[in-house]
Image 1 (cartoon, one colour):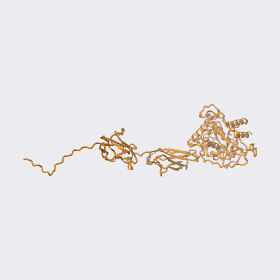
Image 2 (cartoon, one colour; image 1 turned 45 degrees about the vertical axis):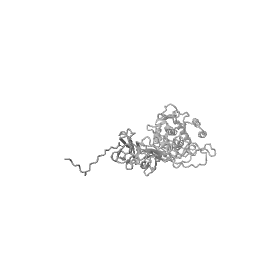
Image 3 (cartoon, rainbow, N blue to C red; image 1 turned 90 degrees about the vertical axis):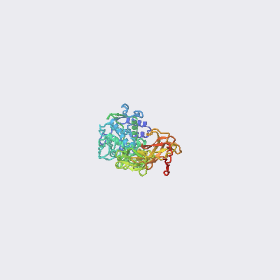
Image 4 (tube, rainbow, N blue to C red; image 1 turned 90 degrees about the horizontal axis):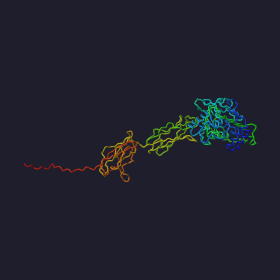
Length: 585
């Protein structure tokens, strides 16, 4: 009768407060329940397998829809929103989490944040599930390595009030060679643990009874199918994949919100134990619509129950219909070894090249699976964005490369454009919630490390005239002709070019006006540059023209302005045929 009353209360409850009050009232009317069994066959707490578990099917749930605790958190939360988990030990005992258990949840959060950052797994969600599944490992009764002692086992899933799951592990995990049982602080059934088990404490074993191993496995399981747990819909589907019960989801959600408001660490073994287990809920008798039937009527389990988690929510239960409703197949996520987890830089160094040149460095990424191992055959799309004109070899802005056996994918070489500046290369992989890496790259202007005149002829002009001889220079880089190098020409007063000159020789701009600095000069394909015509004003003297290249090479050229020298006409020499005058005796 209590179960029947509770079901009716759940259906009529419209707020969390009402639901909490209902459960509290029921708790007062029931005899105290034991914690999960210590390991003896057939013992443990019963659990709803009808209305609350999507018609009794495990449907791939991590726990096989095994029993869970229905205790709700206190109505008064431990602290105001935004409080940290480092609260003092004062306050509600329910807010305290045993030290090793809390450390395991936080370690799992950090690990998943490294291998699957887009999942955004919060440790408080693991704490909520751990509370509901095992009362935080029975109040933190774990040894120094984090292993539950004694081990935590659910009842045999033998179809008597629960789903029927025949043995899948030969009793290796649960000690039962006839039927499976949920195992450990996070209550994984053996077939699910076989796919998702982790070794988080580094002891070389994947032990579902170890809180570190179990917490990390639960975290990766909740993140399956590219879920983003910061999204409410994804979080709900993750919880329902753990246990396909809408009441289970509400219970986990309530503890999740509670722990988000604040928790504190307490010594191992001193945690508060839950008292209200979920119980079998019989299906209503045909025609009544609400009354309980004489015996539970769970539906047969799938051929391979619990083998892999499924992300979809459970089918609404209730058990009032006499004809089954077809349920669409639920997609099953691949195991973590084949699930795309993260995309990382595979050692790409600085991306920098001179205009028109090939980049020495190539963009390389590393794809990892959900457990951090290299993942092969992942398509990675590389895209160049920017205005430098840089492209991949072959003239493409976008290329797609699959990762190899080592999990790496390397883009083709980059060919720098002719315009100096910055651009980006973006690598994108994965579907649903793609992982993205962005690399900054730079194209520098063509450079020269030397520049010199091509001849040594003196450059002289009269005042007000132009220099008759053109100035020609050649730029080189590492002794090779430096084509396309920008050159600046400036009339200066000193050889270092510290002070510009405002008189003496000058160039002309497009309007014919005098200018003494030119910045639009570029060497030709042979690295040579012929300067525009140079004119002299009326000031005589020796002046300096300084040419500077991109890259810092420079040359100083002397320009002389002086008037032509005046020459005196010479007397004509006597005619050699003329007879000299006779000399007098």
